[in-house]
Structure formats: C-alpha cells, structure tokens
Length: 186
Image (cartoon, rainbow, N blue to C red):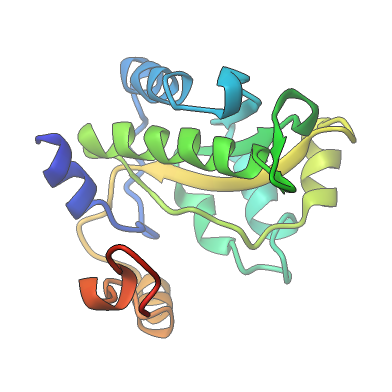
C-alpha cells in the first residue's frame, strides 16, 4: 500500500478480531510516532501501550467519558494512551503546541498500523482522572487521546454500525468547503 492509498483508506475501526499485534508491527508504529514533527523538535509525546486484557477491560468500563461509551474497546488486543508533557513543548502565538505535536505523532502511529492492516479509532471521550489513577500518570502529564488497535473483524458489530451512522462516518466535506486560495473565502 503506498502512502496516499494508506491515508485515503484508513477509517475508524470499532470491531476487532482477537489476533494479537506482532511486536514488529508495534515497533513500526512506535518508530512512526518517533519520527513525527514537533515544535522545535521537543517531542513532548509519551505513549502507554496496553495489551493486558484485564487492563483493557477496565478501560472499556471505567475510563469512558460517560460510563461505557468506550465499551467496544474491550475486544481490541491493544490500546494505546497518547499523553503529552506540556512543559516539553512550545507555546507560540498564545497556542499550546503539545496537542498538535502529540496528535501528529499519534496519527503517524495509526497510519503505520494501517499499513500493516491494523485498524484504530481515535477516542477523545475518556475520563482523564480515571486514566491517571489506572496507569499512574503524573499530574503534569496530559492525556491527549487513546485508541484501540487491532485487525478489523470480518463483520462490523451492530454497535460499530450505529456509531458510524450517528457520526456520519465516511462522509467528507468537499474540497470547496475546506480550501480557499490566496485569502479567506469560505
């Protein structure tokens, strides 16, 4: 799969097969994150890789934003929690760059996973306090996102189909609605 095909075919996956992710694939994912750009190359991101089924189960039932909103992750063979150390990033033009830095690294991790056929689903609906307690995350570290990773199941679950319909999954704005040339015209 070439780079453009990889970018254009990656989708949020919410139904996983139980097949474990090989260490070589995880190593590629981590290398992709390591090579992401960051403000002044400060590399503020940190990742927690979780493969223990019990810990993933606790994430699914206790770390969701509103109860069990992340319940589907319990079937994933791996979950990654993307964290950042804001003190190791920049503030430019009044904007904290740790969010963008970590998002770029996490997206590169997701694309590397997809190049091996491993799906993911960026989750922003989580309880940071619960995650801190469960994984010993220090107060100065922010949780930016998390994602289950796994090989997509042959059939999507009813839950995955419902979420895709509600979230209008797959729908993309037209180029004319997101791009302007030379000056703002949207």
